Image (cartoon, rainbow, N blue to C red; front, top):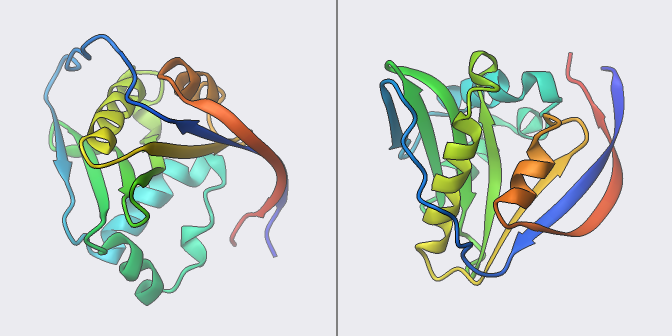
Length: 172
């Protein structure tokens, strides 16, 4: 049994595309690419590297077959931001319940936290979500996530609609 963490989960929604100024591309050599049918081991690498410091455990608990059904589903899109050819972060959009879309995950590798790339990726994710027949975009964050996550979501146009207490257990 791993260490247990109490947290508050905030559920947020966006009911229309936000009116955000154009997002400048980050300086340096960056490429945002969709990972189509990603191998489960690659997805697990991204998920663990990005979420390790924030107690991301839900996807770790899934079998390879169960995880593959999600991440290789045609209505689930995973985008990886590369910096000089190496993953810098990723986000996942779930369109399986259109017209509701979900930003399931968004995060950066530890060495890129604080670089401004999170805002860039979030703007890209929002634009991609609203390029479909989306009428509602949802996301959730918790108090174990980076402290700037909730304010960033709100700055980009998300509004909280529910909160709940939860307990997450680290995996050994």
